[in-house]
Amino acid sequence: MPELPEVEVVRRGLERFVVGRTIVTVDVLHPRAIRRHTAGAADFAGLLAGATITAARRRGKYLWLPLEPGTALIGHLGMSGQLLVQPPDAPLEAHLRVRFTLADGGTELRFVDQRTFGGLAVSAVVGADGVPAEIAHIAPDPLAPEFDDAAFVAAVRRRRTGIKRALLDQSLISGVGNIYADEALWRARLHYARATETLTRPVLADLLVALRDVMTAALAEGGTSFDSLYVDVNGTSGYFERGLQVYGRADLPCSRCGTPIRRDPFMNRSSYTCPRCQPRPRRPRW
DNA sequence: CACTCAACCTGCCGGC
DNA sequence: TGCCGGCAGGTTGAGT
Picture: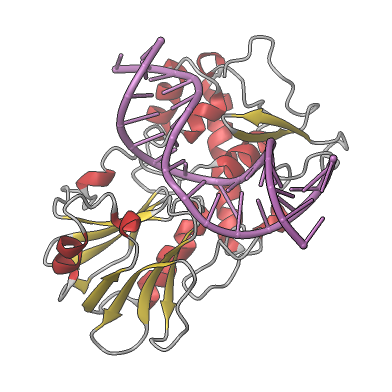
């Protein structure tokens, strides 16, 4: 899915439309959607029926809804997941996986997921910081107040890998995916295969600025949507595709120098760079 | 412990 | 038209 800006758009929608409401019924239409909830669909539904949603939170690409009585409904959108707020009489989506009705009889919450890489689970164990145990391994994201810049820089410099691999490691920094990694590296003029241990503190500080800038700009546009898969809770697409400088722009001119953007295979997907602004390092690290 | 990669899915697009 | 390969914004768990 969706990287941090797209997930934050969804979180804001949940905050607006479902916080304060009480779940009445839970219908799991596809077991794979709750595979992380190992106790199964009946347990999942039983823990949620009667629970009241007290907030809508996010860390990186994970979402969760804290519940009264002290549990939390966790969600990850994977590659194609959507959380939609729909009128009860809206036609059922082709890939509807879980459906929640709410006590006031108004709009209902639906989890729709074409590829089923995403999923939901109920957490019974919430840490002191309010983060469910299942998400404890996810690092803070760069837009969160608890993100520690110095700790991130030190951790990157201790690594022995390529900088893009580090950016995609959600236990180091969360919320960054293939699009925003490429966009931030272009802004910071860094090639994705630059060795982490050779990057200086100022260079990494600049990279953090680039990440925050591009994600904040994307959020202001409602996120990036190439197609109808990436939408807010009302099904509306964002407009940041226009703001992308390298991602998906193979052979188009770099907006800074005119050199054609290059696409390389990378970790079973793609990386986009400007060959001139982001020269390949002499000793690349994958 | 640090790191890498295949596997999990469905749909779409381009080439033959 | 149909079939096939390639590709898609992510995470995890097994393996080195």
